[in-house]
Length: 92
Image (tube, rainbow, N blue to C red; front, side):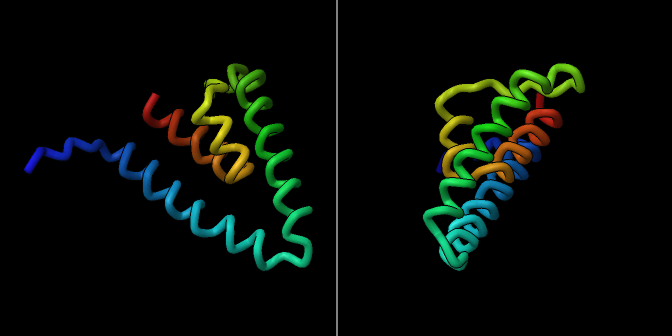
């Protein structure tokens, strides 16, 4: 069996993503208007991603806009952007 070299930061990152992947779909499904809630989550996630990308350097945050970060922001919304920015600040 191979050696699993995983840092504490990566472990925290993956645990936080699993938590958010569990919470967000439940939130969207339980809302009165799941489609509207989902679209609002998509829009707010992308807005947060671009805000952190363009204005984060003023406070020492850097979050690149790439396929991974865009997909996370689209699917999971603002909580994923916050987690990526915090973990990126710890690891980076």
